[in-house]
Image (tube, rainbow, N blue to C red; front, side):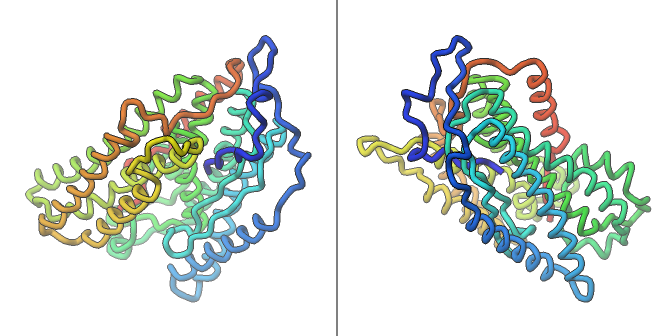
Length: 399
């Protein structure tokens, strides 16, 4: 998951963040071992996350196999998340970047997985592009090294059921990678049947989904770290276009679903379902804007106050998402006209004060050493970013 921005109280002063060496690399921060390793809060949050994931999965199934399946899901998902987070942590320690242990985030019931993943706090600046690449790429690559075989094993042990028995459940999105793994490992799926993923396969799908989000080449997500290590400051402009493309994809997705219904003579009766199936891209457009705002330098008291702050974005995004769920089965156009009007107000504010401004810097990556990656790391960076394409799901979760 994304790293929290460096703690300004622990960052070295500007006079020591750059080196006078000819290669242009930043000076190394103080060794991570100089600070006692705090672990109690991390351990408590991890224990709470285990309980949260177990409870969320247990209540989603019927006895007598509910607890067994919940344990399988919890073990597989947390193993993937641990591999991901400790990939970051170990790479940070190797490069002597002062990083915390992962803070896991329990979220029972509200999250289909029972957790929002984890974050690591970087207490010092990442000094070089090589260190930035190693730390950014180590997490998703370590997580995928576990998620891919677990998905292959889990899908091989999944069951095939008639479509009538699975019609009421959510439909998990497919990526090029999952389709490839299904082709080689899934059991045959006859006509009018569907594949019901085993708990291990569902957990591994969740791990792949988390990796997809993290590999978005935006801001301080893992993909943003890797892209900045490869492209340097040019990545800030690329991040703007990638971020805005998520908003475009929301409208294109809703429009394509509605156009299909209109061609089939169904009208707009399923507009609510189509909005909800596309909502992931709109929500993450705003979530990334909030993360970018959160990681900005502290505002000076003399700076003008923007009306589009974290609280406004948060309430607006949560309100639109909650209202979309409530209106999902409403066919009347009036409530949805009001919903899109509210969305228009939010996007107008983004255009005037927020992420849609041409001069917006909220997704800019913090600078690091100017020396480019070596050839080997550059190739690995391209491969890591290409994995985003393999994991991409147009509709991650369908209703």
